[in-house]
Amino acid sequence: MSTRRAFLKTSAIAATSATFLPRVSWALEQAAPPATPAPPNIYQQLMAAGPNTPVKSTKLTDTVYLLQGVGGNMVVQRGPDGLLLIDSSVATAADMVKAALAKFSSKPLKLLINTHWHFDHTSGNAAMHDAGAFIVAQQNTRVRLSAPQHIRVTNLDFPASPTSALPQQTFGDREQLFYNNDELDLVHTPDAHTDSDIFIHFVNANVVHTGDLWFNAMYPVIDDSTGGTINGMIRGVDQVLSIADDRTKIVPGHGDLGDKAALQRYRDMLATVANRVEKLKIGGQSLQQVVSAKPTSDLDATWAKGMIQPDVFVTLVYNTL
Image 1: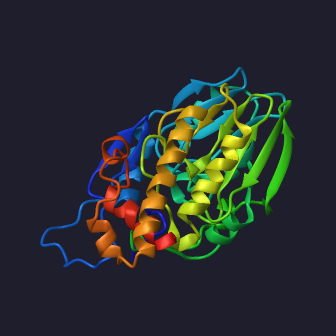
Image 2: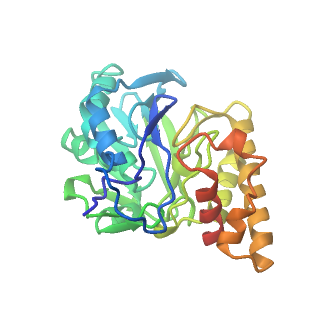
Image 3: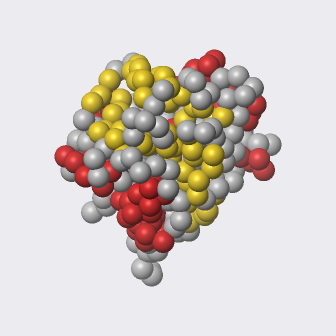
């Protein structure tokens, strides 16, 4: 049986901006059993890479840093209240993450914020909790982690997480924290990448972590099995754009550090694909007809560089409109 740690099934792993990302193959139709043993799934690949992949640090401000290793991008904030970490990577990368954190401060890790429930952002939770972190997330993150989940796009199933990995404090639409002499606004974006997504705005530092609302320079995952929709993604990105300015440093869930202009280009791509697919769907075309029409063909050279390839992305858009 597949586990929740086997999130995205693929035959190869690609390194993108120090973050390992798979290319997702079409998995909504059952294929015949392979004649040879299947290659390791993405969970196995990430877990194998975790203990040996260095965590790269990029300074955003004097107190806020981007961390990139295995899994989703992380952010650390240091200050008198202790270390704060956004997302926890994968479980086997815990020692690498802890070693990276130790370089910032002798103060302990006190607070961990999850941007959403997916394993490449949360499977390190238990290790960080055991090291002293108090975990905060949107309420659906705890709901999802507390029970078995199924991801349709990869046809994989995930068991419930251990209690030590679960958020200890949750919120609905919005939470505000005052930590290390900054204001942190945690904002839920409903029905976006999942139903549990938030972005985190460091108001004084002028930094935003978008979580997986943004896959920089890539077609994104839209997890339609746990509440994700294309229009929710667009609305979530619009919320981030509304509080950003030209100096805001914006951390995507995957990919390179970006800014408002880069996020706007991504938003324009999402809207363009959504509009094209919606027009074809309203016109009565089936999913297969829309996929065959290649509505992203003029965009693929720019955006088909990550884990989601064009036919899969078109399918996710079609199914969530």
